[in-house]
Image (cartoon, rainbow, N blue to C red; front, side):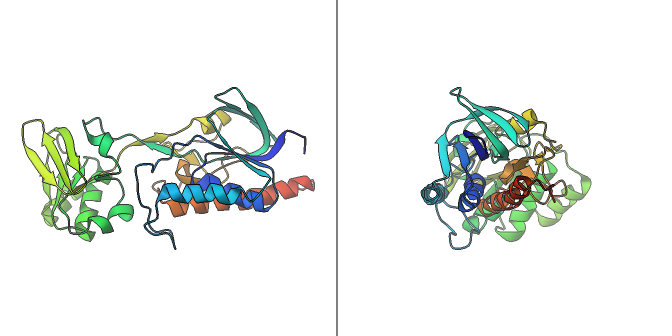
Length: 312
């Protein structure tokens, strides 16, 4: 390997990126992790469904991960933002916002997604604290509470049906405008007796446990918690710059080995998914698993390449 050339550059220092770097470090690979420091679950104080760490602070998990990486001298974690990426397998180049350029034989993209809550005053500020996106992550904690689900798309209506089925018998679907749903879903809402409020929402206010939804016509709905499945976008356009195929939902297409459609580039975490998977899951445990999977198979590819053998 050329001096100055990393084996792998990992873009993103969340659970997926740090887990990938840990695998590479243990295999004595020279790795650079570029960490922009902006994680999707920053507002969350707890994470769940991570065996031995249920309820653990996600920020503390990342801090421990960085501490563990320090035991592997070949792994460097550098704060910064990657603004461009180019190249081909065995010779990629990235440029950071500060102008630094680095090269690597392989790339792992673990840049994640960004939530973009509806443009309703007070909603974005409470997203992750009083306003929740995931019943797997927060359903248990909202059991038995009065809940609202904000949104009018089929997935959001299904979310209302789901939390009503699993966690609460007091659920109101707030559609923020006229209801436009498939007849089958409307029928299920009626059958379950879910209240639907179609008035435009003027504001979301309050604190966790005491939330207020104010409607444009002057009405007020008091709830103990709110669910909102916010639209998302890619945190970074590096995959598109490199020519990776992007699926219709905006995620990066990967195969079962976490490989993108560009040789030498893998993607891990909620930035990517298999085409057959309906959604990019946001669980910390799955992001970490993706990072391990990406690194495991990429390590094998690096080794075969060093022997002059083709990829399997």
